[in-house]
Every structure is written in structure tokens, then in C-alpha cells.
Length: 267
Image (cartoon, rainbow, N blue to C red; front, side, top):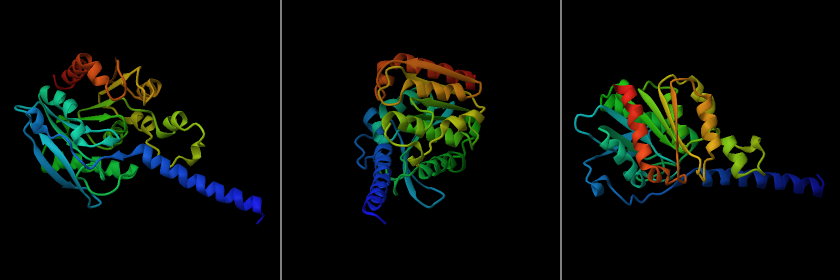
């Protein structure tokens, strides 16, 4: 092997491992410290520990609503943990829904290390907890996924029966996001798939898509691409504001459109 060939091989190997590390660091940004509890905003809750099918222990909160019309399975984004979503899931609770929010493996008090397959397994475990342990019928479960959580929610609903799906500020697939974030990386080197655009085509339940044209993390065009691939019934709501603040900037519209969607499902 010539010196030049050896240099090319070594450079290729180092670049490959750099891409893998970049993927992990970009995709998963967990925090172990939970800053806020539901009690901080006056919500009663159950601190839940449950097991995945691969025997990992996860943590979540079940926030019951009086005379709940349904239960929301809340699947959060890639950073922080459940303690960073209290203001948002409080909206759903005030709509008269039980809320179950959980942390992926490696986030908050959940054990393990996050991976794409692991996140899908975690969502399945959360669904099993609601349907088996809590005895909640699938026709009374709505799944909500934000950003990365949208991909996890779509994967779950493509396999399990629910009443409806809400996808907030999510994207078509990892390859499309990588082209925007890392245009220098060849697509064949991207190991993560998060192929929501393929899975959404076969989901028949009512679907609500929410996205801001001002989104500074997930381009609006990728949210629209995901919506366009979905079958009816489906609805799209434009909001204003950045990726992490759109639901605050557009609070009234955000809440109003979700209420209309839930009324269509449960009226």
C-alpha cells in the first residue's frame, strides 16, 4: 500500500467516525437533571417507572384530568427531558385530557443510551403502559410528537391503533435534514433514517400537522413534505415563531386548532 493510499484510507475511516459522532451529538441532547415538576404549576401527577421490551427502566409522568375525554401520549423532542415540557403539556391537560409524558432512554431518570431503534422501543413501552397497565382503550389515545418526537410518534402510530396523531414541527426524514445541516456529508454515510415520510403514507387515522414558516431548526418545507405524503384525513396549521417558541408566540392559534382537531375526533 502506497503512502497516498494509506493516507486516503485513514482519512476515510476518521471521517466515517466523525460523521457517526456528529450524528449522535446532533440527534440526541439529553439532560439528566429535571428542573421542573408538574406540581410547580399546580398539577397532580403520578411518577411512573416502567420497563421496555429490552428490559430498560424508563421514567414518566401521568397527569390525570377529571372526567378525561381522552389520553394524550406526549413524545418530546431531542433535547432536555420531560421537565422542560410542562408549559406545553399543561395546554393539553386544560383541554380535558389525561397526559402521559415519558423520557427516552438516557434522558432524565430513564436508564440506557439513546438510539433511533431505542426511541421507537421506548414509545412502544409507553403505549403498552397506557393500554395494558392503565387499561386505556386505543380509541381514547391521541399521540403527540414534537420535532424528533414527531418521527417517533409516526413510527408508533404506523404500528399501533390510536384515535389520532398530532405532529408538531417535525420533518420528512433524517436524510433531508442532513442535506440542510451538513451538506458536505454524502447521504450514504447517514446511518439514522427517521423515515417519517414513508411511514406516514400508511397511517389512516386523523392527523394534525403544525409548523411555523419561521422555524429556525426544522425547515417549513420539510413539514409540508411530510404533510403532502400523508393520506386523508389530514389538516395543516401554520403558526408563527421559532422552532422552540412557536407554540408560545402563536399560543391562541396553537390551542384553538388542537381543540378543533380533538373535537372532530371525539365529538
